[in-house]
Image 1 (cartoon, helix red, strand yellow):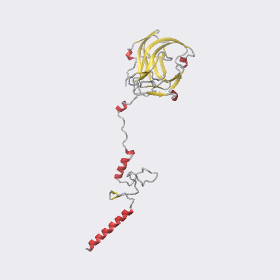
Image 2 (spheres, rainbow, N blue to C red):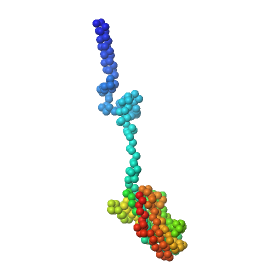
Image 3 (cartoon, rainbow, N blue to C red):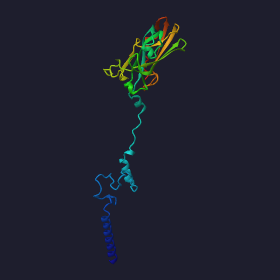
Image 4 (spheres, one colour):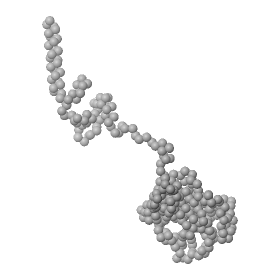
Length: 293
């Protein structure tokens, strides 16, 4: 009986000791794996009030694996990154796509003096010249507007045209004449251009023009055209003998504007030149390069 009493007394003393430890350890948040009330802890269990000022978000080195897992689930840095777009999604992204067209060929002999605006723009030298004129059309067959903005904001891309009275995009179009053997004839021309909305080509496009030569670009489903009669819209063929030729016209020749693809930026038309007449051999349906995108 004495032994049993002593054991009971020891158990009671041990229990009192435990209670004293609990009372002194008021900052503890767990006891035997069970959460204990702590008046100094915010209601948000994810907030660590023991973190020193200026070190918010620091990792608790004594955290249990369970605490670490919970903290990781709440940490934005451990969230899975957005998946990379698939090839199909990239292909479906709205993009610009220029397609060129040429038409209305004619030959004329014209005289330019030193004060001519064509001479000032560098299109031709003073004197009499034989010219092959034609219309140049640029279609935006893509589903995104090609927006360049104000030329004064991009002086590296534009130059002022005296003959047209506004800024032109440098070297945007490129014309090359090939002979019957497929060799270059030496007739090559880089043509500056003002990009604008001239006429709508797709019924689903914007119903009104957005761009002009003051704020340049071509809307999706719209086209711009340089008429054959305009200053500089020609190539000089002074010493070119009569014969069979191919005109190659390329738009966005220097890749100034990012496009969906550039496989359809060039159109080729077969011509027969005889004195002051030009006959087009290529079918009219091929005056415009079909879109390859």
